Every structure is written in C-alpha cells, then in structure tokens.
View 1 (cartoon, rainbow, N blue to C red):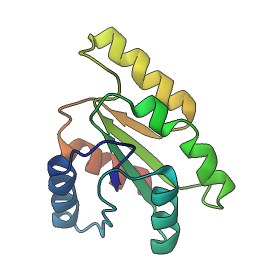
View 2 (tube, rainbow, N blue to C red):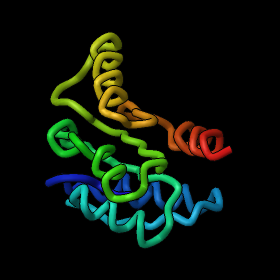
View 3 (cartoon, rainbow, N blue to C red):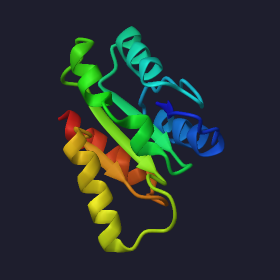
Length: 131
C-alpha cells in the first residue's frame, strides 16, 4: 500500500495502514510519492495478495495508467489492485463519479473507491475477494 505519484498525503495512508493491521492484515506501507515500480517491487518482495493505491491530489489517471498491465508483465497477473481517493480534479457528481470509476475498472483495477470511503468497506471487499 502507498500513495502514488507526486502525492504527499501521508496521514490517511498511515491511518489506513493502522486499520488494516488491526484487522489482521500484514500491510507493507511504501509511503508517499511512490512509483508504479515501487508498488510492484514491494508486492513481489512480500508475496502480496493485493496492491492498495491511494491518490488524493487529483492526478491518479496519469499516475496509474498501465499499472495493471505492468503487474502482468512483472509476473503477478492475479494480484488484486485497489485504488481510492480523489481520483480526478474537482468535486464530482454521482454520475461523474460513476464514469470515473468505470474508467479505472476498464484500465484493470479490481476495486475503485471515491473520497470519504470508510476503510471498513474496502477491507470487507478485500476479505471477500480473497475468498
């Protein structure tokens, strides 16, 4: 797990790590300003079942494009990839959010979460997806 691109939003990332560990998940936090390569290398080193990408500064599309394909190319084709945060600039209506979510799902992300998502939802989804 970590924050991708030039994003430096550390507090939410650290809180999410804490909540994951409370639920018994061995989360490796690679921190902020992380590249796609950083996520993939950490996932491979730890034998991770999932990659959790956070982005709060609105440039997720630029930072995340191609990540699922790079996971496949790196030999981890079945890893779950979750993405959450402020994934586009500005506030979005519900319809705009649905379009944004669909865009990332079409890129190959398994789960996509809007701002203010309760971490419990994503963690419950992770347990469901790992079953």
